[in-house]
Amino acid sequence: MTKKSLLSTLHLVEKPIRSTDPLIQRQNKLIARIEVQIEMAKCFAEHKEYSAFHMKTVTDPEGNKTKVSVPKQIKKWFYQEEGKFYTTIKYGAKTLFIHDSMQVIVVNDIDDLIAAYELIVVEIKNNHFNEQLSNAATKVGKK
Image (tube, rainbow, N blue to C red; front, side, top):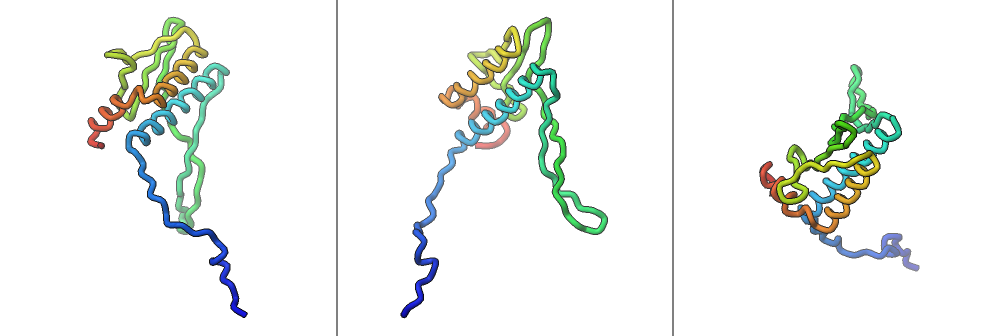
């Protein structure tokens, strides 16, 4: 009697090639950054401090490495002046044009700010910012 290998019971295929479009990567990066700004705005509305953390490897004097959670500094894209909220949309260090040559969004309250960010996310998914994202990436030497 032949012993059947456990590996022969698995359904195996060749690894599919995943082509990751750089533009889609830029869109996802920008959407992730805007979602952080939405969370910051919600915390602002609730009079709470927004905090984010990332993991960092630390080596102790004996040479042992451990991962620790370290606060991450994230800048707000929005500010309040004379009762209105102002914001821009940034990709890296570049401020993107929202429409024509306009870069600043002005809203009356924090709920409108959150709604504006959510609208921008929808527009990114609808490919409205593709040209701006490509230009912003090209200016920093990426294609």
